[in-house]
Image 1: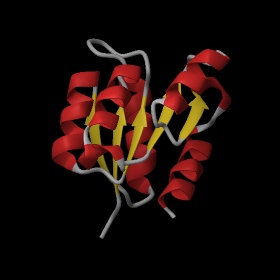
Image 2: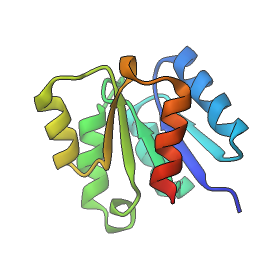
Image 3: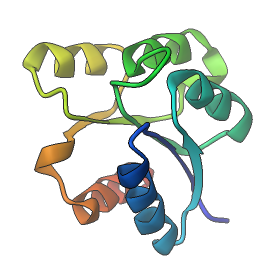
Image 4: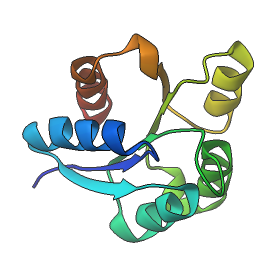
Length: 122
């Protein structure tokens, strides 16, 4: 049974690139373009892992993490933040809200992102 990855990313180009890479690795992929859709997909899609951007239309990634943490069913699903927000306070806030890892988009290639996903699903 293929693991399911949810990608919450409003940048169409980047989202499609990551979806393609992750699909090619044999994972099932769910997509969301904003925070509300992301939360809905977490609740209904039951992903094994979430790749979450922080700067999103509507509710941002921090709020997604905060709401996810309040729900016992969703709280156990690991989240890797994938963002261009690289300030220490953003990283600390994301991790304190329950993210398992924090990747700064500019510092990671799609291949390295896949590697992180693989490691978190072991």
